[in-house]
Image (cartoon, rainbow, N blue to C red):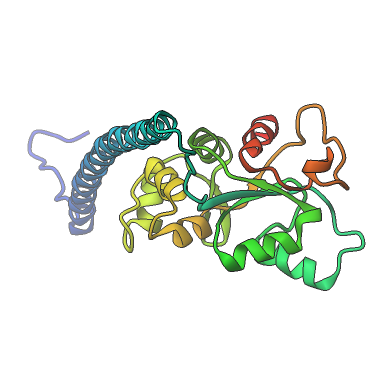
Length: 246
């Protein structure tokens, strides 16, 4: 007990420094949390605005195609839609009896496992590659709904060589926002669907889509689609296969 004539011992200098450092650390953490919340809010607002903008753009594209079809029909002409720019490719067969060239092409397409799927930009070189490996893949031209469902449900990013789920737009902003204008999931969907200028970067960032077995199974993987099987190009009918495997 301290008597009436005794004074409190002085606080050690080290303890004062510790208390001061702790206060400073708390203030810094508070500022960092506030800045983080502001950044999240900004990203959320941006994502919402871009989603609205893209929805309006998709609606205009669809309305324009319908108008062109009707105009062609009214004039007694045939409407020829534009050549597809995007394909979704799914590997449907394993490695037994695969030639070295076929194996190499499947590796270049990043289709190393059965039921893996990837988006491919269609040009002369990629179309030739797809034709060479047709017996081992099913592919076609996905619509907006298929692209959106694949990215939202099966979309994983390649971050430091790891397969990370896209649970936050901040991950996308950190990985792609510096060099491109890709800030959120809707940006990724738009870039893939429209095959934009940053398609290669976005597609390489996305891990190959690991799909389930199709509901009800495949018909015959050894036959081409036009012969009643599953392999090869099925054009717009790939969307039904994606639904059954997603």
